[in-house]
Length: 352
Ligand code: SAM
Ligand code: SF4
Ligand code: SF4
Image (cartoon, rainbow, N blue to C red; front, top):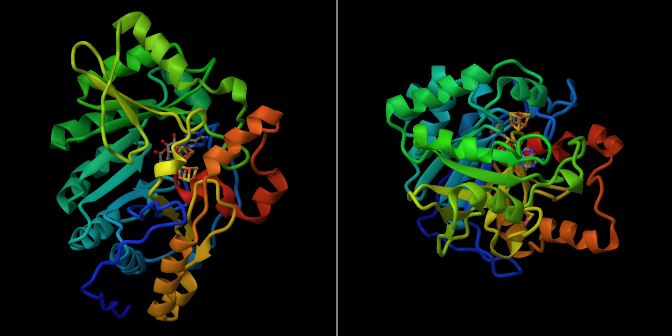
């Protein structure tokens, strides 16, 4: 593809709530090698057609245009991003973009052992591994795959190679892993990883979600306090979703309270799907098509869509979902029939 000529200026954008555009999550595939119950409980899905998937060069060009409007953080995600062949090539391209000061990856870890070194050599800044349990039998039930050991081996390899800033993301689910929070923090210490507990969200559709399964920030803290004693919140001036805490021995951990305490007011994140649709919110039902003008080399239209899309952004998805609780209307976010018609509605297609 002919490279896009990038203007030398960067114009920061604000949406209707004065939120800047800073962080872009780029899904590089909608495929996955796990079937986590809260994300992809079915075996088969309506997959994005192959010919619609953006090439690395196309992703790189789009990211370059996003940086013109203030994006300086990229997180590669999926589906499972390590299933995308030759991902380090994309990372190398992105690392050549001066405005990007953070290129990170979220992975389920299954393929990390083989790929950690080449990701590091390509210049990846940080890795987050999703790990919800330390019990192989639970892992098998949750993910419908028997690959627990490979995740741990992948995490060990990340350490051995010298990556810093490892995070371990755990979806906290009542009745499933809410007796493991201390074990997970202790495990995190052994691998120099900061554990972040994520409240179970009702994103997507076929996700087995129910309010009763949400283990709230308050409940997570209570469980940890029983063992560790007083827990100190860390004061940070940050738009990052995780609220961070410190234990008596200086170990830190985070909680992402998306369900009970949404942080939409400071949200600077948006998502690009593997086929080039841009979603302004995790809960948005429609995305803006950037692939079509990109493939027509109509870069002015791509830029216009980014600019006007963000300037008109009114999304506060998690807050709106929470507001439904008072009228007891918080149930399935998307009906199964809708999901079959539009695969983009699934969490695994838009990147968590
Ligand atoms: N496959 C990779 C992984 O699992 O790390 C990247 C994509 S996955 C969609 C990104 C993150 O979304 C994971 O940490 C996963 O646990 C989280 N996630 C998926 N469904 C969720 C849900 N219903 N509630 C909370 N987090 C969820
Ligand atoms: Fe699990 Fe991530 Fe795959 Fe979803 S995309 S099924 S969270 S591994
Ligand atoms: Fe941002 Fe939407 Fe998530 Fe709120 S729900 S924090 S607006 S992505």
